[in-house]
Image (cartoon, rainbow, N blue to C red; front, side, top):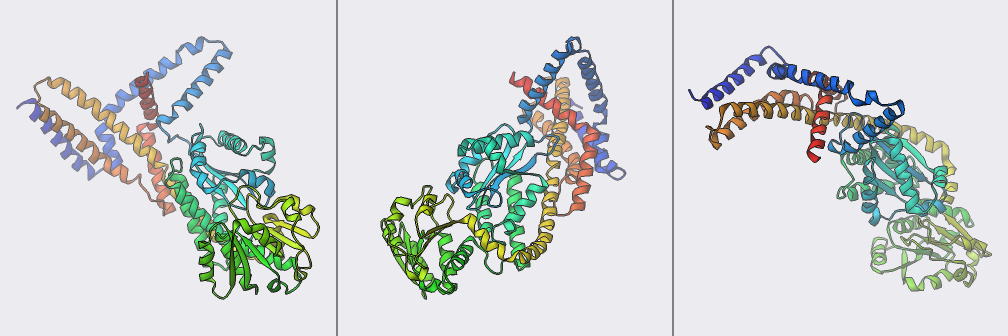
Length: 537
């Protein structure tokens, strides 16, 4: 019998043994039975390496040199972490941000990032040394950066420095207003944001659409990875459930509706239908303004916008209201005829200054002779300097707190109902993320088996000499791969979980820890990285 037939027979014999062993051993023990003969060699090599390391030249160095050597070693390990992004410690999910609750609009507008700039911001943030993934949530009420960081404290420093560089605000000023949340707290915060629990107006509906937009933009951007994709998907689910399973969305649930309520509070009683209303901008916020103004009895309004089409769409959607269009060049003229001016545009520079407002005629008697500017844009559309003018009042998004404070007890009750749903979704997300921990073990186990397979195959081929044909060598290679894949199938199945069942996740993690101890996979990845470094050199 030729050497090739002998080897094939040997392989067939091994496969037969495998099926007999299945009857009396679990899948993990099968791997031990097949590869156990190699464990002793691996252990001997590891002992030799440890012995050489313990007798290395570092023992002869002075104490201060040992510290330097340790620092260099730590830096080298960090530098080479890119060889395996899945480290032994789970990366942290963090959020750093500024919100309407703690930061004045003057600072928030400097940090605002337009949607068109989100991909650039994600690329810059995820390119930092300790940040793997990044996302930006920038609205009129908040500016928040979500990241997955290899080191949470270094990640905080890198994000803070990026925010300072982008906005021109010194780091020490940012820290006075910046909030930082990590892991479970960061996850819960996003779920509350998506549900409208953290909004200035409880249950605000627009924030859920904004969270959806973050996911939509991020999915086509390098740097918005698997962890943040899962996080934002779960946050959207939480937001939808809170709105469908509680009464949180009843009543005034948007910045626009709160702005209309503020106008009603500042005007004389029942005077809103009689005053002249101007809206600058015709986007989503302006559409909500029109809707809520109509609900308060104001059926005539002027809209100034760059293009007419959006105003025509509003006229079609609200046929019972008289909506008049004027182009942007007529803005100042229209303002002179208005008593209440709502501004909601994406302009990054103010549209109104003291100089042009000062030349306007007084407001009508229906508004008490006072002209009210209600600016719900971030960055702001109206310069703060106009407050120096007589009979002129200016309000921005921060002033909407006055409307919100009207019903604190009702807000608290609704928030408690929603928190139960938030906690449920939080548990689901954490179970899913825990299930990802097995991915590195699966990779390391495959690498471990492949290294042994390749080593033993090389030995066998060497013993057979040059008499094997290319076809025969390919057949032997495929045979060895088939045996390894069949042996690994069971352990791999026990390492996979979709994260939907917390108990199943716990069992999967136990299997993972058992396999890592059994095959010393921590040492395995170190050996692979060392080999990669030597190849690069």
